[in-house]
Image 1 (spheres, rainbow, N blue to C red):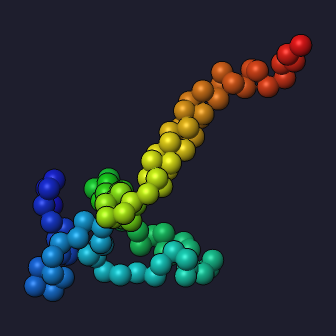
Image 2 (cartoon, rainbow, N blue to C red; image 1 turned 45 degrees about the vertical axis):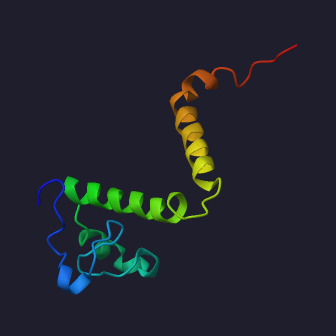
Length: 107
């Protein structure tokens, strides 16, 4: 599969129009339904290649887009999610600088 091609599992006659937010591979047990004893086997069945990881991130992106950004009457939710996410990332980046000021007393 090259960049920009449909997944190998996708069949237009079976699946209909292509949806980038849908996984077309063989369905497996959802993570929420995996028992603790079966967790190792479930993790071993995952495809851990870089292409599979990028595909999963792409599907998550499109699910987020379809749910929050592209509806007709979208609200402020996507803007707030981006703002809070940015604050969390920059807090992690600047934690070393802020850590030194924890025990400072300002008079």
